Length: 115
Length: 115
Image (tube, rainbow over the protein chains, first blue to last red):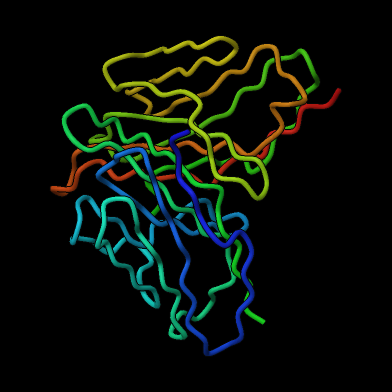
């Protein structure tokens, strides 16, 4: 079945450590996204990539980094510079092009807790 | 500055009655509006969308209405079922700022349907 796989589902990190969240899709979508959800905050865009080897900062990119070496993969690194990393992280993908209506397909999410 | 606003953080409805979830937006350049449904600890799933050239779109129990002059859209669920209990996010996309349709999300409305 086609879809988006995020791992791990739950992750604990000590302060000062970097951690990488994995996101893989087999939908053959060009665009991939990372969102963060906090209680009462909705979904906020961290980074997005419309094509391999290219990515753009979203609204809250500080303290995060990404790479897009393959079409299927868009890992997110939460660095020690991120002040409040405890959150629910969502990866998504979408079709790009003239028919793109903006619909996103989301993974199941990864919950990161900083101890 | 919030471009997509869901002013009701929560809504409680009796099973079998109508649920009406509201959303306001400020950017007249948006050309697609989408509703997503999200259960706890899961990724959002697409529910229904509407193009800015239409004023109504219906899919089974779900209908979305768009009032462009008021910059307002609403999602109607009839009849409401306990399984509809979730957080509903309104989102908008459009070709603005040279960027290809990144979704802007509201903060969500938590719907509780009581048996």
